[in-house]
Amino acid sequence: VRRYPYSVEQAGTLLASIGLTNRDQDPWVEDERGTEAHFAVLTYRGNLVLEREAAFLRDALQEVGIRLDVVALEQNALI
Image (cartoon, rainbow, N blue to C red):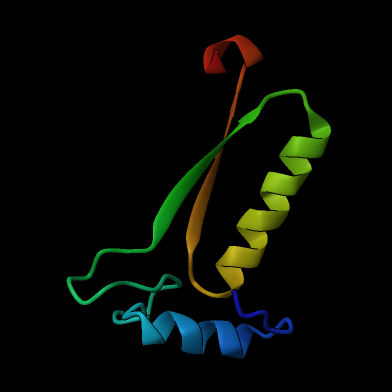
């Protein structure tokens, strides 16, 4: 796997190379059919480390136009 230094511009170029670009001037990138790059991550509610890491990931992906919903669930809900 090729590694790249941190660069929002390079991330945009890589996303565009797989067909994800901002086609409608909202904050999110879309594929050629207009489907947004939108994901969800599940985490444990009350585990501050996991909640902070998920929020960090959400914010980093938002910089390049990928939408990430962080869903914090009670621990028993994930078992």
